[in-house]
Structure formats: C-alpha cells, structure tokens
Amino acid sequence: MDWKKLSTTKITQVYKSIFLNQCYLCQTHCQSTICKTCHEGFPLNLTHCLHCKRPTHLPNILCGHCQTSLPTYQLCFAPYRFEGIIKTLIHSIKFNQGTHYIRPLTELLSAHLIDSYSKQSWPEQILYVPSHPNRIKERGFCQTQAIATQLAKTLKQHLGEQCPSLPKTNPLKKVKNTHAQHSLARKERLKNPQNSYLINGAIAEHVALFDDIMTTGSTIEHCVKLLLKAGAKRVDIWLIARTPDK
Ligand SMILES: [Zn+2]
Ligand SMILES: [Zn+2]
Image (tube, rainbow, N blue to C red):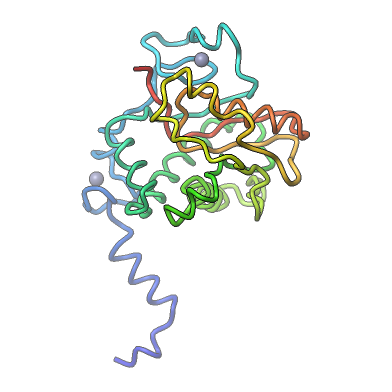
C-alpha cells in the first residue's frame, strides 16, 4: 500500500472505527464513550442541596451552609459525586496520565447541561477556574483548561451558534500559588482563596464558570464575586462532581 496516498480523512475513519466505537472503560462495543453498564457504576449526585449541589441525605432542601450564607452564583450543575470511579478518573486526568478520559467525562457533562438548559437561556461565555502558572509548569498542563476546551467543542457540536464561547485567553487568572485545597483543614480552605485570583479581560453578562470539582465552594465563591464585580450579571457553575461532606 502507498501510505502517501492514504488521506487524513481515511486515517481518521479507520481510527474512529477501531478506537471510538467502544467504551473507554471496558472496551465493549457501544455508540457512546461510556457504556450503559459502566455508567451504572458512576456515583450520580441525586440527592443534594437545592442551591450548591452539596450531596445530602434528604432531597429538595437547602444545606446548612446555604441557609447561613447563600452563594452568589445563580445555578450550579454537578451531575456526579466526587467518589468512586469519578474520583479515579479526575485524579488520573489531573496528574496527566489519563487525559484520554477528558472526552467521555465532557460528553457526560454536556448531556447533563443540554438537558438542564432546555428551558432557559445558555450563558454567553465559558470561563474556567485556572491553576497557577507554576502548577501548570509542574504538571505540563492545566486540567480545567483542557476539560473546558473539550467541553466547548462537544457543546458546539450539539448547539451550533447557540453555544457559549470559550475566550482564547481565560480572563480569570490565578496569581497566588496556594496549597492544594484537599491538603488543608476546612477552616484553612475557607481562608485560602483570598486575593488568589484576578480578572484581566472582557466578561459577558451571563457567564458559565467551569471547575472539575467543588469542595468547600470558597474558591468558586471568590471567583464568582470577582466576575460579578467585573460586569457579569449572572454566573452559573458547571462542575463534573461535588465532594460529599466528610
Ligand atoms: Zn463499559
Ligand atoms: Zn447548599
């Protein structure tokens, strides 16, 4: 065979038929990137706080944290709990060996978002909570940027022109290298994000702020306040998973 004559389209077709019509986890043949059987093992976040999506034992309640001080974002979407297979996949993406799991996770999140926004208007802009440049240097990439980029691509395929845009440069910057949130006690985590982020760039009126997981919510709340101050009228939070309380 003359390999020079093999077109890129043909190579893509062959690649897709071999690798993409199968479940990323168990490799059985299926039309989506995660098969039904594997997805049954995913920790769905079904009972949660009405506002912040913190996993709760009872459905349709406001958690104690939201009753004390309601976070300033409008809506929060978190289809999964940060445990089990979801925790394994996100960790594996974060430490850069599992970047191929970005695609199946963003497909699951985009399906959840498309369903959730069926009766309301989409945000105009997708921003993400970035890592500090030093952390990006250590890991070789910023996982929230990589996931948000793939998410925007997946949404675009479904929504076309209606799709929120991902700015070339994220206007939300992390300027102070703080300790990893999970290594700190709750009290420390709540103090931690102060003055760690700033805005440099245009902010739309209706913004979607993506982060892979939300733990205490203090980083997100800090970023939302900055976005509201910079001109946003409404901020929605898009997460893959929400951490259950210990
Ligand atoms: Zn499977
Ligand atoms: Zn809550």
